[in-house]
Amino acid sequence: MKTKVIFRGLLAAFFVVAGLNHFRDPAVYLGMMPPWLPKPELLVQISGVAEVLGGIGLLVPATRRFAGWGLVLLLVAIFPANLHAALQGRMPGLDVPPWGLWARLPFQFLFIAWVWWVALKDKRDETLD
Image (cartoon, rainbow, N blue to C red; front, side):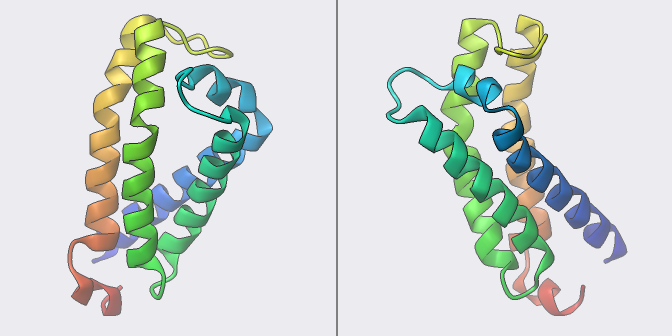
């Protein structure tokens, strides 16, 4: 159980830091937005808040499952922005080579699996850790 608690904490910290970064450096996220999405500034802010709240929610047993489902949905929702960045071959504000942008895409699935493991896998785990 200790391993799961550590990995839950790491994932929570990742989401909180990534979410806060949406407000510190929104240009990076705006540059990833596909042109067909409406109100990109608002979407960057919403996704930033969702990441922060989801990360915190992972740490609270009473909200862990809700946060887990929210983060899974968020990861699915932001996939088009990551794909758009890969298709553009650049990520404004960051020096990431085109191959690196394509290599990031499978990590969305890894993060979904990670969220599932630490928040959704077994409801009985909530009372054990």
